[in-house]
Amino acid sequence: MFYGVSLTAFLVALWLTLSGPFTLSGDYPIVMTVGVVSIVTTVALTFRMRIVDRETVPAGPMIPLFAYWSWLGGEIFKSNLAVLRLIMKPELNVEPRLIRVPAEQRTDLGRCVFANSITLTPGTVTVDIEDDGFLVHALDTEFTEPAGFAEMGQRSDTATDGRREAK
Amino acid sequence: MDVVTFLIALGLTAAMAIMLARLFAGPTLYDRVLAANSFGTKTVLFLLVFAAIVDRQDAIDIALLYALINFVATIAILKFFRYRSLEIALAQMSLRKALDGEYDE
Amino acid sequence: MSFGEILQHALFAGSVAAMTAGLVFVLAGAIGVNRLPDFYTRMHAAGVTDTLGAELIVLGLLLQASDWQTFAKLALVGLLLFLTSPTATHAIANAAHRAGHKPALSRFKPPHPKDAGSTSGEG
Image 1 (cartoon, each protein chain N blue to C red):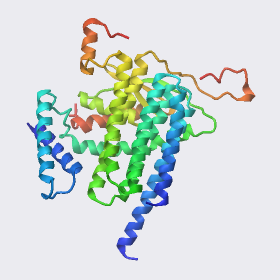
Image 2 (tube, chains in turn red, orange, brown):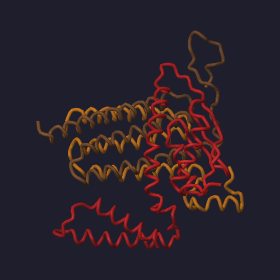
Image 3 (spheres, rainbow over the protein chains, first blue to last red):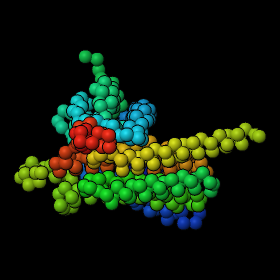
Image 4 (tube, each protein chain N blue to C red):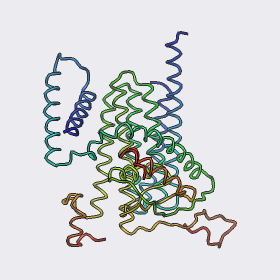
């Protein structure tokens, strides 16, 4: 139920943002009616598809995810500069690598966030997804440090599923 | 609007032209899809800057739509060239593959 | 000059700086896509355009936005690009990988007239 309510709230906010000023004059009642109809249809169809869960509506880990994205922004900036330096060198000198990165996230959402973060960071792209890790293509050997991947994986796990209990 | 925004739009056009060179040069299908996708991203950016230059907010809506269509088109092209069919839902592909191995590469 | 004017000028300067930096990244990405040796490496250059280039230009336009609706729509476009570009890149990479497209993993150096005949120019 929580996910249904957050999905509806998100759709209402989206409709109001895209449809314009909040006046009840002119043709605004029609706009409002169309909005209600489409939001109800969308929510009904989503429920019928049985995909209303925390993966479709990640409303719970929203705030940790935004915190994670701001950390990711810094990483993206750093590796962007590194890639920029590599590709603007007058003499190209890159050493592409295919590596395996272990993924120890607890849920599929965490794995999804981790894989997308690897792809979003320039210099590394997730090429294939295996049972216990990802196949990652790196532009140069300088992007293949396991420590960086481990930190990113740990942070994405914490952002989606909360802090891991101490063993 | 002002000179700077105009110059940014010109620069984006230059980047799009360079990307077109890769689109024509190929050599593989994936290079072309990648170039087309990247070209679409630049088109979205160009539309946003264009909206600022002519001061019409409608272009932002078009850019929003273009970003969505660009994404869906990339996935659709890749799906078609991998399975030669758009009939089966992607979610069922792996199931189908497990059942009869028909879509094994 | 009043405080409002100073703020406006500062916003404009920030916007110009962000958009110029974004344009540099977009152009570098486009040039990189043309320069790099094989498909998998070109993908990384396209990623430069998709992430920092696009987001910086959107940020620059955000700073110029005149009303909240423009602001919200621009932010929405930025968020959409942020969410869809890794998925698209991964889809392309995965399709190429599954189709048996092998990445070139040797150290790439452009052929130089001085070391003609050596094997290091192979991509």
